[in-house]
Every structure is written in structure tokens, then in C-alpha cells.
Image 1: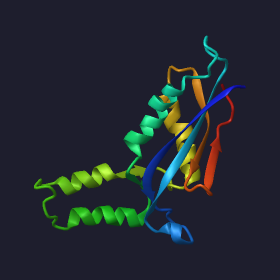
Image 2: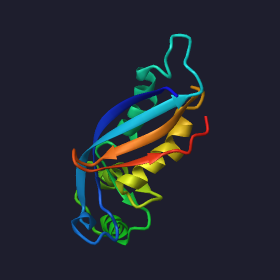
Image 3: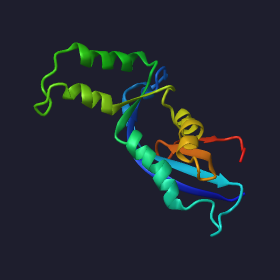
Length: 162
């Protein structure tokens, strides 16, 4: 089988709810996310997919949805409390606009249905995001590797069903 791979770098915050050590704290990473795509056959030019399509469909999804945002598990009690605090306190105007702090919070936090570990992020990208983003291309995201640092990464590989 032929595959085509492209990676993309984003900066993003998270915390791992229930973690036994320092990853339970609010922090962030400069992530490198690798996408490995496959197809039943090559196109008429001899490619799985043009690399620019991976960029347009998957890398730009990362840019629009996770880059410079904070991933928070929708069941994370600490993050829910932090979010609630912003609505309870009287907030000063931000850039002279009433309600701008609420808008900034809404834009900054991405509530996820999973605890945002690298493993869960990779699985979500393969099983939820890619099927929608790659519709009509004839290509499947077979594998995604999420690097939190140059030394630490997690990979999710799809059961091959091209």
C-alpha cells in the first residue's frame, strides 16, 4: 500500500484531568501532528493524494479549530469551574467592548468529548475529523501521530478498511 504523509505544527493548551503528576496542571505544547493518508490505488499522476489537499483539508482544520486554543474535556471539573467563574464575576470591559471577555473565553476554549491526551487527540483526528474533512477525496486517514515534544508522542492507527 502507498501512503502520503504530511505534518503540521500548532501551539495549543490542555490539561490531563486525573493525571497523577504535573500534566494535571494547565499547560501547553508546540505540537507536531503527522497525518498518514492511504487510498485503494494511486491517481492518474501516481499519487495517493496531493500534499496540498492534506494541508487544505487536515492541516487547516487544525489551524482553524485547535491552534492557539485550549482543549478542555467537557467532564473536567476544574475547567468547568474556571469557565463558570468568568460568568459569575463582574468583568471589566475588554478593548472597550462589553461582553468581549465572554466572547474571548468562548473562542479560546475548545470543549472536547475526551480527556485531551495525545492518544485521544490522535484517535479523534482519525475517527471523527478526518472522515468529514476527507469526504470526496477517496483517501482515508490511516494514522495520526501527535508529538507533544520531540521526545514524546502518541499514535493512533485505524483498522485498515479502504
